[in-house]
Image 1 (cartoon, rainbow, N blue to C red):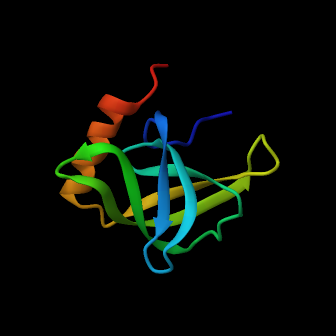
Image 2: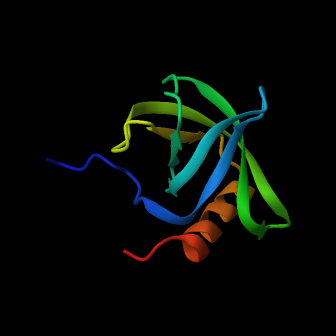
Image 3: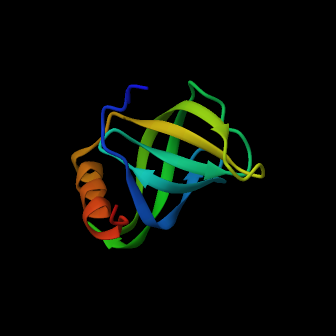
Length: 114
């Protein structure tokens, strides 16, 4: 089976809390990142093809902040190996230079070695 992924996926050594800025509801935890998006594990399924305004808490201060705000579009949602959870893929939307720097720092400093 051919891998259709555009960007290499990096698994984080920390689960990073992600909340919806519009509702202030905890969506779940980011478990991996790439240059183009991220995967979130959650207790509830995420509606696909939806634009979210997220706030993600960082493992330490990066670029002067303990969190980052960004917009992402939900692309897919499926059951996790653990049936109590769901995995959802998000694509970054209108990504800022600040967010690009934070993603690079996360990949360099907080990702598990393969």
